Image 1 (spheres, chains in turn red, orange):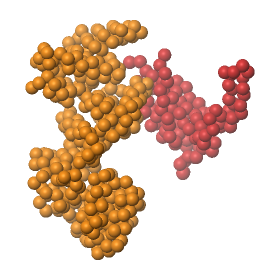
Image 2 (tube, helix red, strand yellow):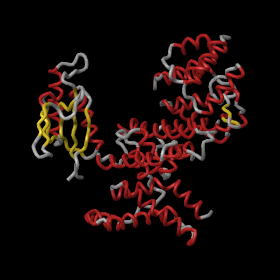
Image 3 (cartoon, helix red, strand yellow):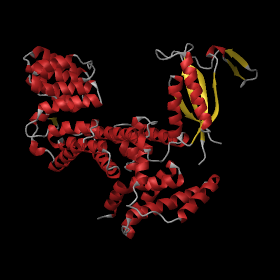
Image 4 (spheres, helix red, strand yellow):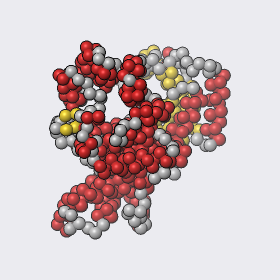
Length: 117
Length: 402
């Protein structure tokens, strides 16, 4: 059975707020363990954390001259802060990984499929 | 049986199974839905002329498969899939009426937790029950176009996000089944609440929901919650004839029991007794038991309160607390009940005001009771309930909430 790639996206504000009693070290350790499991099961494609949305730059080259704007594309309270790209057989499997990802990063996770070729 | 009746019957009994079989073979919900619709169209034209085939379900399945293949051939970009599908069609078809798995898979696909509850209901009624989009829209008093969009969006998500066509694994089954049952109960309530609704010919979603739940129970005989929901629906439905008489809402304790449907009542009560013996209570089973207790010759109120207590441990909610308080009025008096009701944060829920009006009336606090009735009317009761509340206001009485 062919697999599909899914984005597991983590959204948060400039200040990440974790549930009470959860430390940065705890989150790092949990995410590391989750990453190891993803790799061991051959489901890892890519993952990364992003710098704050204030570091973003928008370029629009649809006109004659590219227009450069400081800041994120859409103003919002919360931005994509990090993500995984995984392989999964179907949404059920992707949601199982999403559940573990959410537990590991101590925040909600958005599961979204990539377009297939 | 006329061709039209035969067709209506085969749609009721086989639609989900046939769509399911096509989804399994072609992995494409749209294709399956359209192929079955075309097969029904052919049957509609042919059966009255040629006669009803000896096995209508098998006839429809074969015709739908042919239509699906025709369509795949026409769409040249799908040549690879056509070959695959043709190869599969060469393998002998499974006999109908034995394997129910495709319909069960379809239930779980339509009611996947990643779909909104309203989308699940609409998809299940369309694909499993075989209702038309127009019928579903009428059932929910929604614009047909809006309903069509809801269904299309859900089908697109099934395809794009790869919602699987599969019965969940053992460990996920209870949670996933709860999602299916919630969708069926929503369809049921939509139909139930429209009883006595003069606004037009709404199709009977309550009966559709009962039929679908029956199918589910037959496929998952070891799941007591599915049976609990079936019992709850039957017991609720059994009282319809007495609940609305001449377009008027009649409270439970004033209902003429001769108008209750004895067949549904007996089946519902029997199911409840069997479920009590199994001893794995869940929210639907307990609600069914509460409903069954209300049909006893003398309502055992202490038992009803105990059942509400159990329900609160399984599925706590302020509405359950409200109903528990009303039952408790019978065992501990209206004052104790009113105290519990006043503690609930339900001021935007009109039955809360109706309950207060009732209890205040019992306590002889008539001015406050009238004020509570006015508050209920100011919210948004259904036309039937509004008429009932207006009658209470006019007579100065307050029958208990139905």
